[in-house]
Image 1 (cartoon, rainbow, N blue to C red):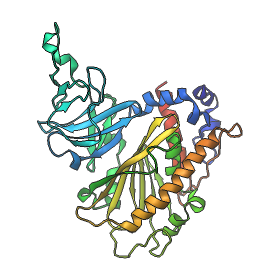
Image 2 (cartoon, rainbow, N blue to C red):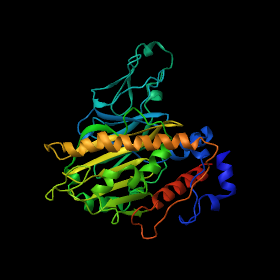
Image 3 (tube, one colour):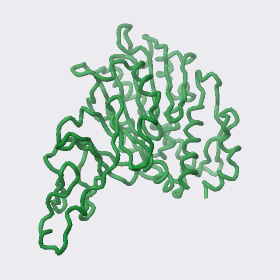
Image 4 (cartoon, one colour):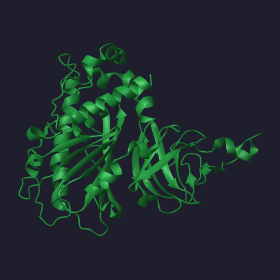
Length: 378
């Protein structure tokens, strides 16, 4: 098995020094057994972005997502509490809610079992005819819900460390990068792919997000937007951030006026699946999750954020939708195809000790977190 092979030669495969380290073997992106282990060790034990507090202001407001095989939702209860649940009816397992919105009660579309906003079973047709039927035995199981900077996260592990422990240091730096963050509101759902899912393992998509070594060749307009000599990557225990601190107003991606609120780029990754992104121009963020739809399918989707009433930055949106998205999807899907070749097993990281420019040490950091989680969950 892939995990056993890596354990036998860990220092060679993933040295603590990124300058000496090899990448995860190809089998980690291809082996169904590895993916099954990831579900339990990574997806069901850590925090994932699901939405924003502004989407959950009134009783009955809800948002949904799917974490690997587990559909979940978060709802504002009648008592004002924010609660998370598995999005599965306790009768015959039909999914209860879709997308986001507001309901007076949770009614299963299959047999109309009805739940209150606190997850308790309100009504099951003809259940009163069943001897010993216990409504309390069929409440919706809850999951953990926490938030930071208004962003709502869920965790299926009741014993996991708090979100604040994972994001320690992120909120302060994020508020410095985006001082308008408390005023932002989600404006639309958005996907960083031209289809429902990329034809790539979720780790391929994360790997691609975490480095700009590929940018000069694959994203020439992005490199014309930023001074890549000043591009930098910082790493924490559970997160990393790439920053493009110098922006060229005259560039081939889209125009950036000198009076715009955002004059830098910022690309956060919060383990294991969340990205928080800011591009130059009017005040903005995109917050998205990289989640698996199977071994070799992954979605990269979430929400665009803007100031209430602000006009859309159409040039920036055009660049993201028509250029950057297409480029990155092609890259990830090509890598997934290449990983299947008998000619490839592992690569080497390109590393800059000062964290500037094209260094791949955030990918190295991510690979070690993957291995750490799988070893711990073994």
